[in-house]
Image (cartoon, rainbow, N blue to C red):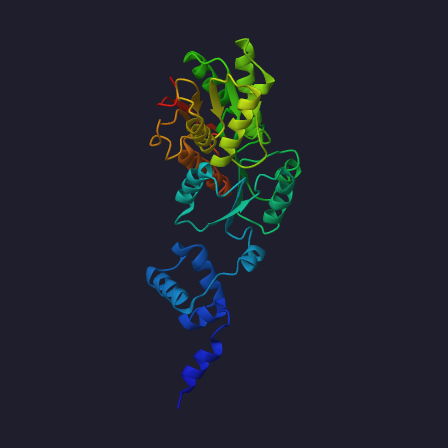
Amino acid sequence: MKNSGERGRKAKRGMQVKLSDVAKKVGVSPITISRALRNPEIVSEDLREEILRTVEEMGYIPNLAARALAGRHNGIIGVITPALHQYGFAGLMIGIEDRFRGTEFTVQYSSTLHHAEGEAGLLKSILTQKPAGVIIAGAESYCNLLPLIENAACPIAHITDLSQEPHRLVVGLDHYAAGAEPTRFLLSRGYSRIAFIGRGGDVRSRRRIAGYEAVMREAGLFQEDLIIGGDAPSRIGLGRELFSRLLERVPDVDAVFAQSDELAFGVLIECKARGIRVPEDVGICGFNDLEFSPFIEPSLTTVHLPRQDIGHRVADMLLRAIHDEPPGEDRVDCGFSIVPRGSTR
């Protein structure tokens, strides 16, 4: 015959453990448990250890909605990115996670899948949950976001283009320069029919296109047909497709500045399939300096971005704002560098 204790445990199976259940087990008030979970340093070490042990044993999960009602925020850091699956954003996420790991905050990611029309709705949805703060990691367009940003009850930090965006709490780089300098580099290596391929819909890409175009016009080499883009996210297959379309329009193209290393890798694969020599016939420069870029053959010339450092800096900036600490710099330029490798002369 089963005892009443076993029956009691079975009856509770599937029921959510409440804060009051933890408090009863520990022998203190629910408010003491709540305060100890938010600020562990306010209770003694022995009590803190007992509370944490009981929380783990009972499987207590804090109610974020209740936490938001009781205080200024629910402890969530909302991060909005254009795409979670792209390699270029992985380094940013690692940097952000590094800084919030071990804090009272939980990072929650959301993706717009590069749809500008969905950005405002997504940000509004996050803000209604009373987050501690938000990081917008590369918006497609800020036009629809500005009213929400200006009236938000929490700090919002941005990873974006520094050459024109007026927001506070911004970390990033000058994307106009990041389009101009690689173009100058390719010209210096003897290339002249330099194409620009990639998405043109978001703020950063538009600024890089503007930088590329300015340098090509200055050199007297600009041609509209040398710019070719697509609405799909950067993928290797898209790189092959865009380069094939480019060759139909400009058969004598001699260099490609691709807006991601994935696109550049696709261009390289298409060149090999067509018997086009790289870098002799066509030079290729990517963007992002992803992990595989030094190891393909030929190794990929690219633009290096300190993605993990950008993640660190934006998280640090947001943490200071959340805690009402002096902001320090509220616009941080992390810069970029060109990494010459085997895919260019």
